[in-house]
Length: 218
Ligand code: G3P
Image (cartoon, rainbow, N blue to C red):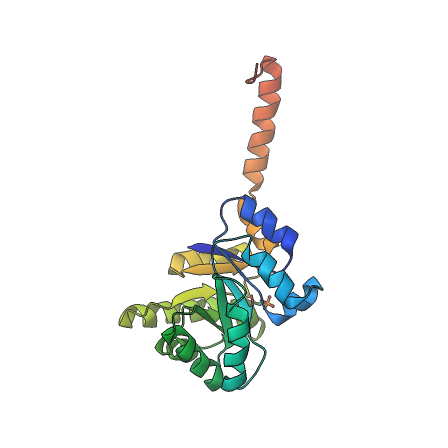
């Protein structure tokens, strides 16, 4: 499973990239607003921090303007992936862009039928929002299971990019289901490394090593 970081914060992205485990970045208008940076400038900087796809979202709601915005966005860097909403205009835009070889991430997916439409529109990625689904009384992970089943039934190549991840269990479940990508806030990626027994084990080994009075680097 690929790991994307869901943020427009440059320091966080640098920190994640330094682990060697980062496969891409997703942003959205809310994350750009949170960064307080100029959209074009920050997106270009992010594209330079990873070789993987960097999702940059259109903000128009009609197909024609979405195409114009996509034209501007894809000139930022070769690894820009155009993010469009799961609407009729968004999927028209998706079809036109992917026919042309541009990567597209179809976002704000909340049903398996919507995911089926995104795949038929040739999406590179579909982004089902599991956390927001859970928040509204649905089962986000059940949605991922349904999409996996449908995509496998028809050999769709669209990658399932699990978004709106809130905790490490979402990541574990995504991996068990066989989702292709998980985009996570930096705090969730950091949480994946943690285990109380790892910390306790290190503590014990360090205490015993100190008793030997030895060093590895001499
Ligand atoms: O990038 C989209 C998605 O991950 C948003 O997550 O936490 O705002 O529901 P959240």
